[in-house]
Length: 61
Image (cartoon, rainbow, N blue to C red; front, side, top):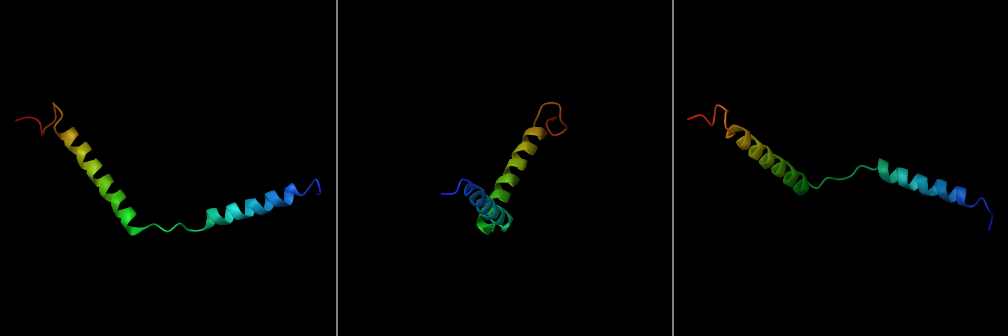
């Protein structure tokens, strides 16, 4: 085995990894919908906490 064989192997693996990184990743619609819904409910929860905090206009009777 030639001592410099590792260099072409590293180059080949680097090219494979770069091609994999450049390839577009498909986003499954269900997964994207789940993320949007979760983010939406998190924003609602934060808004409710801010609105019901003492001293805010919504908390004053």
